[in-house]
Amino acid sequence: MDQIRTTRRIALLGTAGLLAAPAIATAQGRVRTLRLNHTDTDIGARQEAALLFGRRVQELTEGQYRVQVFHSGQLANDARSLEQVAVGSIDLAITGVVTYATHTRPLNLIALPYLAENYQQGWRLYDESRFIASQKQALIGRGMRIVGDWEAGFRCFSTTFALPSPAAVRGRKLRIAPVDMIRWIMESQGWNPVVLPVTEVYLAIQQGTVDGQENPIDTIFSQRFHEVAKHITLSNHIYSPLWLCASERVWQSLPEKAREALMQAGRESGQHNRQQVAANDEALLRQMTEKGATIARPELGPWRDASQGAIARARQEYGQEQVDAFMAEAAALRARA
Image (cartoon, rainbow, N blue to C red; front, side, top):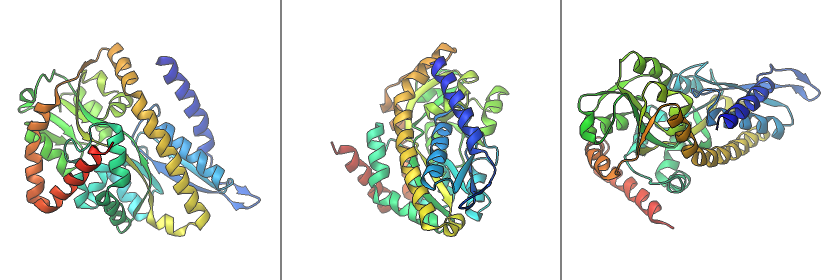
């Protein structure tokens, strides 16, 4: 795995130099550079897919457009990057779908616990759900157009203490993203949730400000959370993919060929990213174990039961009809062979 990691880093660094090139004059006119921001590190699957997206945009537009990738939140944290995309200050951003919920509130429902049990079910949900399609459309009115369905995985815990059962979390401080549904799930389980940008979490755990955090395996690995929160519990409480979005202001300024290139590059890099993340989970867990982490694979029933309070809260906030309709849609998609 170390060799894979080294090879990936060399490839990314080599490609980063190409994509970071400034706009230059060409025979067809001046090259336009689009800035893409994300908060994963330069060794994560997100960065690799972002660079692939950039290569394909450049190829599909015959060099007229380039993508400059900023990793590790160099331009903004997740929440702030979407705010800047909405006003056109950043051209493109990749972040968890849950982060978009602050811009279209019903999207909080995608973080309901245990909507999907495996990657195939999760992909089907995001590709075919009428509710999710309606939320993508709503985001256009908020200044963000989704151009790619990417992957992060299932949210799990990495903590400074062992989690034999939900009873062990009572009163413990857990970093969460600023998403209502995640907060309700954690409160239902017994946590004391603390909202922090992901770029501040490592230090917060190291200093004892929080006792752990929850994120997908790829994020735990790439952000090195296993170094300071060595107990990884595969609770899989939320299926948590990513969306690549373009600023609607920028989108409206693009010719049709460039729009088609962004959509095609988004599809291709998204498919690559989905397959890579799904295939990498066990390898990343092995590597984190070699670095001293412990992996717990609990029976999910108690965690599912402990999360039910969040569903009751969602029904109060959004109405039982809307919540139950989306849960029924997810259940039907899970049941399909």
